[in-house]
Length: 353
Image (tube, one colour):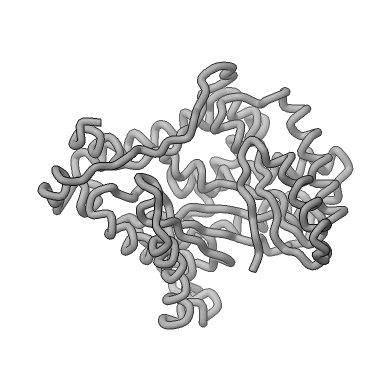
């Protein structure tokens, strides 16, 4: 088992503390696969500023990863958290393009500072979100499309192909407060799509963790979704089961081409960091998020138990506590992105919160 820490603002310091802790406990650091999630550009997108400026951001990241790789060479330290943008409302095509743009920025800037690109490729992990939608095949084919995009990027940098580690987590954006056990069904479908599509690793959230303190059973059910798909359904027993099917291959190619075109547009703006500073990324996400929200409110996009087939009695009876991260508004350099659940506004109206 590998352990990964998402420490947000404390990620840089966390790398040094985590390595120091493991060394102090006598672990063989050369054999440890886990690490701390470093993705300062996505953290900046959440906070609305490039703290210390663009140059300082990449300088600090360079020194941190250089140290981490010298101590734990098998660790995964550079984590492309494209799923964050999906939770904010971007489309699957945008999620793929943003993942590629983030990786391109990091490869370019860190290689300039002396880190070998081969080492960087080995320490990369890509994080995507899976949403249960009526377009099931698009979610399923995202990992396959990303492999095509990744090969294009490596070819453009004349680098040998290294298969990326793709981690997929069931999304929170489509999860609902009322009829909350439906979230387990949604996570099951999302996990199935992820594994069929070729995810290397998978995780699920507690179905109720966003509105109350999740119980042990909630975490156990979240874990068991993947175990059932693996041990009972044998979903991971076939390598690339979508291969050769015309519709799936064609749709994969369409996804990859659309994402590549958007990636090139971001590159023309100077890369992901500059695209964030100019609010291009935020505008792209906001447009899609608003489109999706309107679809939810007029029921073109269905969330069972929330905007369709709702249990009105349950709505009147339930109480909940909204769990939101602290988001300071001072020091903004550009628009910040905020994850939001589709049913959140409707639930607030119903409960009077």
